[in-house]
Image (cartoon, rainbow, N blue to C red; front, side):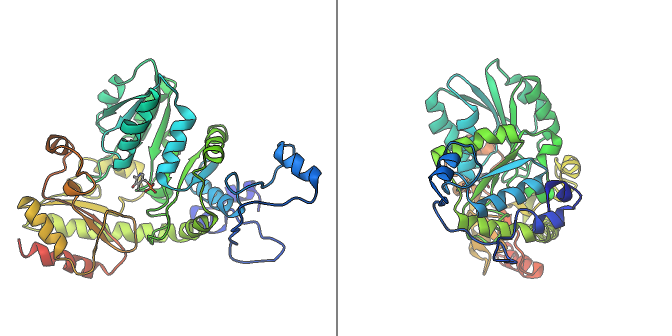
Length: 395
Ligand SMILES: *Cc1c(COP(=O)(O)O)cnc(C)c1O
């Protein structure tokens, strides 16, 4: 099928059919091209490919057929023209920074982003003379007033982690574009199944494929999605600097995309059920899930997302001791910082993912000592609820 034929298909079909061009072997499943380099028929072909006169594979740091299949499939799902895959989500974000920032530039970024991104900005990118201003994801006045003459990039993650606050992508895109800046949206939590940021004006969408796209906790990977011109620059950075995706991992993610919609639907249903149950629980102070009407982002999430996602955070009464009791009393829910897995996972943000923040910074970010983050997996929902009850009944 060519691109025009693909354009008529729905997401479910694209997730399964895009990207793979059958080889002469007639394989049905997508092949894994575990090869670091590619060979040429003769010296002329090698010269033509190296000098860009002829298209084709040269070396897997640049392009690889299996990685290319994943890129095409992800771009199709996201409504983007092109994707570039990377060795991790952080590799994807680094590639964006290297491609689009230089000394003297300024970035406006939502405060509640994935912890390592803050590290990337504060410890490394600033070393090269780039300044970053952090703003409240939901406060458009802060986004607007942070803009300077040298602002080049806006970065947001929605829903935020761990409180599932929702940022208004269209509104921030408008502010960015009025100032000739790019808007980058980290869409790791929603995946293209629940949210397509390009539709709302994002210029670049970034993923940690390590989470829901794999969905079974096996491989590290990332990607950037956007239009051809913007992605050509990202491709240049990745092929030269080297945070490229392994073909084996690309194959894992490629297969992950085939079931992503089904899995996301099940994650959303499970999370909604757990959130509803927690909200009524007497030992629970507050539940953060945008699928609840009590959540401040509920209405906006309904506009931007086709589901509320699989992450539920909740605050138990009794602070850290109570939270740890709930976590330690679980029988099968995994105590790990990872998320987006078929296995449910549980974390205490104040002492792990957000443990490096000062108490004041934690309070400002709404990370209380009693807060627990749960990534609802695909185990039986009654078993998950029972596993949480074990600790909640003790506090
Ligand atoms: C995990 C994560 C990242 C980083 O991705 P890695 O694959 O771990 O490098 C970036 N953003 C979000 C929202 C994440 O959850």
